[in-house]
Image (cartoon, rainbow, N blue to C red; front, side, top):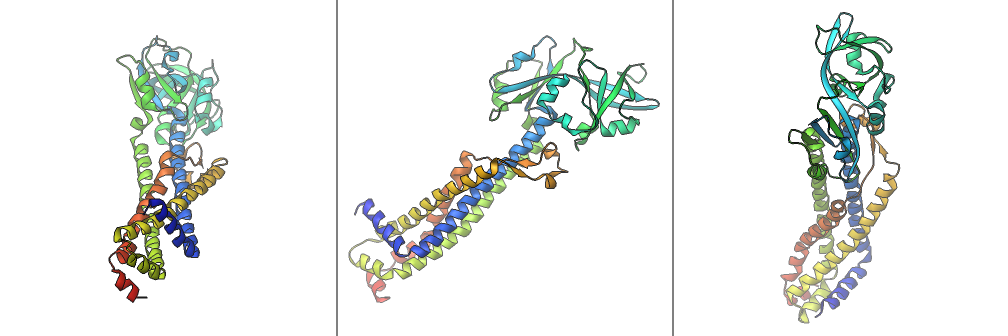
Length: 384
């Protein structure tokens, strides 16, 4: 008998038990749709953590020890949207008798304001203006020195030096101790024109930092790091997030498969007379097993495709405005800029739920297949 004929017989068996079929289909649709949406939400959480971390200061790719004569335009392969030029120096800040050390970055204020989000974390005053002798300090550093907006602070390379006076124009707080206590900013006025500089590269959506790094022709002494190399803890969190989502899928479809197995056992008992007649007509056990697997597989495949469509619709509806988790992430360093999550569909997120549903459904079919396939026609007809 042809496969087309078996498909027709399988459809008739499902249609005869259409109420049970509808309940099973609804269970599979809801499971697949929910997991497509949850996977998109998990991807959105990972995207948000990366976006918050790189947009604050560091960028997707950071390059250190670049020669002073190298132009930032030479660091713009495809995928790079912004290149920020910075110079870092270890200095001492002095206010009266109070003294503290910091890493002082000389930056282009306009470019920094366009590419980074640190200026949004200003707690008092404002971000430095280009061409001025202003300082932008972390709030803990300003408090340690007893400084207020407009106060004068001396910057020196050594505590014994007289140094240069700057005016405190603003303070910031990100909640990340390494930034709040370790970094300070001033407009770059070419004080260290011949010294090496460092670059922060901000990439377009979807661009790979590793691919961009491989495309750069950097001097031998330069050192480039992607955000994943610079923040291995964040990379591990994202990998853990993906693993947890995979475990959720397995658990959900394991439970769904038990329901499918029990439902098809009931189908068999309900249609036991028909199965007995078919076996007495010469339908072999492998053909009976094929029929049951076509019923299970066809139902699961159709319901899974519908579930993917429902999950996509739900994701697209939520992705526009996003999901604001600011109240739950206000003390999380990986959500220092924004707590809004934008769910994002991925190829794996669309493929895994239906494939897993089909796999577990076919495994669930082993039990009902064994029940009917191992019985002889006479035994089936005597049990009616």
